[in-house]
Image 1 (cartoon, rainbow, N blue to C red):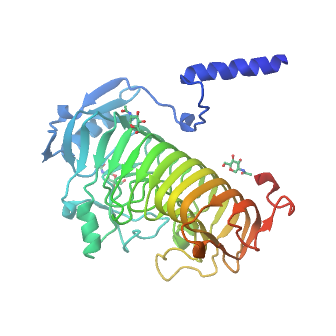
Image 2: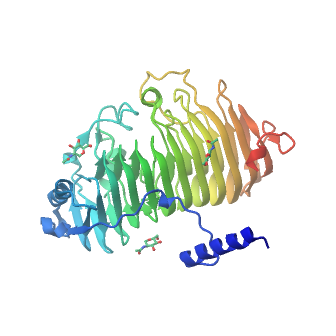
Length: 445
Ligand SMILES: *[C@@H]1O[C@H](CO)[C@@H](O)[C@H](O)[C@H]1NC(C)=O
Ligand SMILES: *[C@@H]1O[C@H](CO)[C@@H](O)[C@H](O)[C@H]1NC(C)=O
Ligand SMILES: *[C@@H]1O[C@H](CO)[C@@H](O)[C@H](O)[C@H]1NC(C)=O
């Protein structure tokens, strides 16, 4: 053995000891944001909060956070939420704080939707996602802040979304529903060991953010709850999502970057997104990119994913009018059990903010590698349907195997696409060459 080999073994051995395991070689991106210990802890009860599930605690939360913001203790402050049910309206976080939810604590949204605060639409969307005009502020909101941690002992943030879902079903909403948690223009954020439940709309929405770690979270909403996406990184960079369980009524994770002409004008991409060791179930997509991709989406790594009872396992979706691009996307080691469709890459998905979108603004989809996908009980294997004026290119599939329920569905559908495949079953389509003979995708093996 060469000296460098011995050194390597020693280093690896030390690493194993530190991790307390001899078998798992877990890679992680969560170190991207340092987990700070705070110098000071205050409890929400010091601000008059009552955890009886009936008292409205919006002012205690706002006062506590005002105190953290203005006293500015060196090293920051932890706001401790003890066991109990803490009913509240929307409140804003501030920099250098940790929101700590103890075991048995529930931060519960008020059902008073009528007095919910409104805010401006996002510039990259031009309007609320659901309705023209403004949108409701998220239950927990951060704008222009940094060094924020939301963590604890798996306490719950409960959106009581059924009030909002019913308004959506009855068509009585006037503005876009609130997210459960939204960060805008913020950086160095950690969200870990928290349960998110029954969000009115998307659960976790980092937008115009960088350095965001979301780890060991559980996100739950009924499968029939409308648009309760799990995590939507939007026009954000360096986002790490790991070790989480998500079961909701819409896409588990959907990477976005703004909507048609507004997203193109704002021009803020999503890039450097890692999604690893996520398990979940949804009537829509497991892991999605788009359909709002107008600022561009690139450098995405999705790996070691388990998807069950889901509509579409992997869904890359865009539309004419979006512009932007989707490139350098890698999916590795995805297991599926009972899905309607294994893989869909499509250029005709989603609606437009208004009729001012440019029909010539076609998105570019280039460089999608999908390797080691294993699906059982898959009704339809997949489809890759590009856009006529903008064929999807360098689409590389290797070792992708789907076993279906019905033979009549066991064929792929492809058009306006180029790329190559190897070891794909059932055999995909003539549009995609076989590699390595084709020379295409040789670096994707
Ligand atoms: C909370 O943040 C929103 C949006 O960023 C802002 O408009 C509002 O004034 C803030 N509210 C408080 C109480 O600071
Ligand atoms: C919280 O839940 C996660 C995910 O289920 C689990 O890995 C973690 O150990 C739990 N943490 C605590 C402090 O109970
Ligand atoms: C492609 O994305 C990966 C992350 O998935 C990144 O490590 C790599 O540098 C990117 N490649 C290019 C050419 O940007």
